[in-house]
Image (cartoon, rainbow, N blue to C red):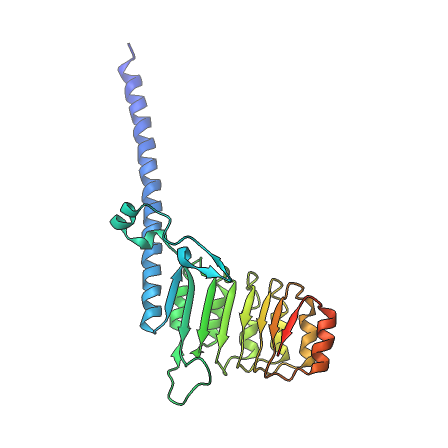
Length: 249
């Protein structure tokens, strides 16, 4: 028969293991609760500004779709809520109408909203149209390192210095900085984004000289240059150096 002392020792060990497992579970659950709360706050902040979000299970990126509902049993989602089983993959904020801005159109200050977004680690697409962003906002964008698509449009206040603040977004595949103050110096910053496939610099101050910086972007597939100071000769020379790229005017 097993001695009582040995039984007690085994019981103590079992209790320690159980307590350890409970602590691990508590940390995991606490982390999920915190993450869900922060995401909910961020989504509410976006919607208060008239924006919208798309979750990972509904995200479509250039024709590639994902599953049509959160990856969890229906009963569990009903019990805990969808926030525990979905991540925001795309955010869109519009401060001015798509097209030519009109007098009196709403200009949203995006810094506070972006501060919420920086706490989420699954955002792949960010559209900011007519959104007022300061240095602080661009620094925040630079912390969203999983970004693959960034649209900053109808934002005439965006400068070369702003673009320099996001030159370490190494996962970016598509960026639009149309209707901004960006010039050739800004293109030099964009040249550091080696995974770029799509680039929109319409209605910026880009010139033929700035195209030299972009010759190292070997993955580029399409580039939009309408409304720039890029000439037909400059375009032809650039195309000769990058035959797989389609330059669209």
